Length: 275
Image (cartoon, rainbow, N blue to C red; front, side, top):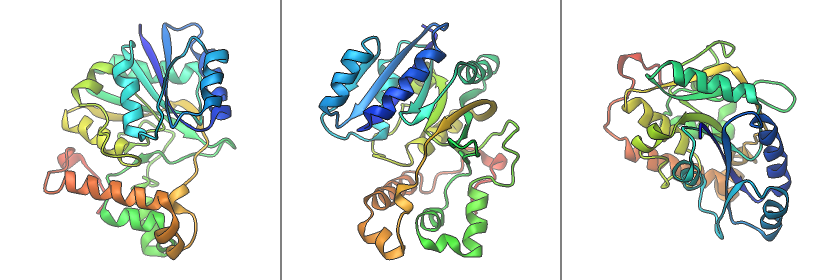
């Protein structure tokens, strides 16, 4: 089998169903399979998958196992040569799949490709990034990001100085949509499941560079994604004290910086990471 579309899902059966219908349309002429890995699976989702999508390989979990662990189910259970990891709130098409795989097939030095991602209203989502600086999390997830010095830092992190309608080689890309060879994913050790949520995609891309493989953004491949910054809601005190996602992000950031503390940037002199 050539393609696996591996979908991460969590407690949104209606949105998952819409995602799967678009995938089915996209792969109807391709040698492809669909895998859904779902966290804290409810009865409604089980019934829907059994009755409406019996051909989809479904891996439910009784508890919330986190994004990295879900993605690893797609990686290690897949039969496809190429794996397209996507979130349940994405809408994809055949053209995106083909464009992403073509770049991988035509260049062995590329380890991971990612599409241009748009909001449902057609506006661009910034999904290409430079590697994190510890201040990046603070500026992005609190009202401190409204200050001019923080906005400059965030704009650099988001690569707003780059033309996102041209091919780019970012330090890392958002894990909501990324394509890679299965053999490379296994060589890299898959997703680090210690990152329950956030940074599992940063970590995978970093491992890609460490293995002398490039991360490439392919704007010809276009998908749609409903993306909300749940950890950014509320004021500074409310965000830090009451927003669970903020704390998950902070904990993942600490794990990431500890994991790579003292290690050189894998891109060496070619990196333009956060200062």
